[in-house]
Length: 335
Image (cartoon, rainbow, N blue to C red):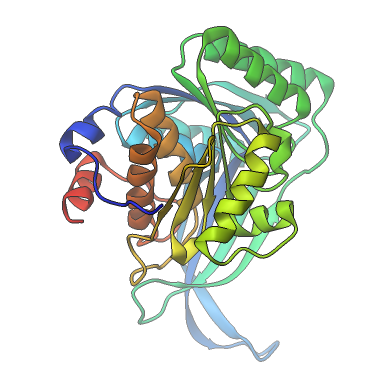
């Protein structure tokens, strides 16, 4: 089944997202963008020399869905780890500037703050072009003490949250114990639990909503997914294994598919295919908006529609981006 018509008045729908309190648990990342313009060829090698013109930093990883929640009028608090380094200082400052509560962020001097540095070249095109990315991270398991501290922060934050969102960027935070703590706390308080899996879907067995992309779903079911029917069959196979209420599979330029328990599926075409400049963070927007909408009591189809439209907006911008309520209302009204 495919149904992408707006459901209800856009002002009312977006207004219902206001004030929802979302606890985000996951790997925190500092995203850096180093922008330069080519001025000459190097004498050392046949490569252009680019003079640094601008350096930008943005909250990434699990901080991006949290920023999306706040941008749409919700309250976000975050649980994760940063290092005792300058990058950690910068990331905590960015969280504060974004209005994200960081009381659940643990500083660990022995681990570097995960940092992704993108080198970009300025050109006559509308957006700079990516040249390379350098990642500085530690993928080793967190210590028992750190894991215990994360679990305490989750239990504390869940007591005042309307929903919990787990964002797994494979940085060591989302352990089996952390997942078990999230599920136990969500059940104790009767709250929604969602997860952006980034692969290894079955790790999130028991969550109400699990999101993955096409490649991750294909890896899990062991076959390619191309047509709508393929995604429906994949959902019918995965949902019982996940013990989930719904599975969202993002499909890049082909939009997204939502499969609900009972076999109900909705295929939502991409709302923007002609102005895609950077897909970074679009999946974060999807899981953030869906979590916020479901916490507000909206139905699954409406939540998916809002998330799909919001994702079509953020891909128009460079780097992690968020959507303002007025923007989302205008996009909903426009189609």
